Image (cartoon, rainbow, N blue to C red; front, side):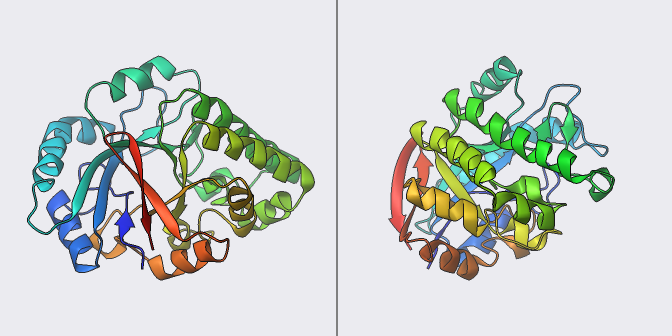
Length: 273
């Protein structure tokens, strides 16, 4: 049974529940290592059509205080203070400055932007793209994963094939090609060599693609590389904490995984499931 969930959001960004409510849901679902990973700040120009930036900034200190207080729980649950930091190539100094503001247990890397396009926001952005344009986007996504890993700033690559979110059928055809698999191998090798882990996420099941992040092909590559894995629900509500973790466990075991990792004070720890 998976007892670790290290990808959680709250009402201080665009979630629906307080840290305390998310924690209570985790306890009820048997989670023993629970990591809060609220979204990071982003520089101007890295914008979604509907932004939560000002709301998050206004409540950030409260969020930190509440999560820190939950570390002293009486339930025997290890509570971790993490962050989902957006990787924005060319903004490395901004990222370093943000990460230096607190002592985070771990840093998830969320790749949501290619240049200044938040590609995971709207299906409409993808509807007019042809096959060649889609392929170029996938290649750009996995190519940017390499310099991200080489910065040494991150512990985990979150939802590693989120780029398929609005074009899953075409992505499935692309990932089946030798060129695609060679690129993904290169990207995940950089992740492994940086001492990072790869997240297996149930968020994709709740999205339009209706598929676990990452897909079986990416899982097979990760397994061959002996890349450590983590588990995350990417929950934005209490109902989504540890969502479909039975399916994630089956997915992981199919590729030979029997333990996952988490980071505490920046150090990797393993836990069987």
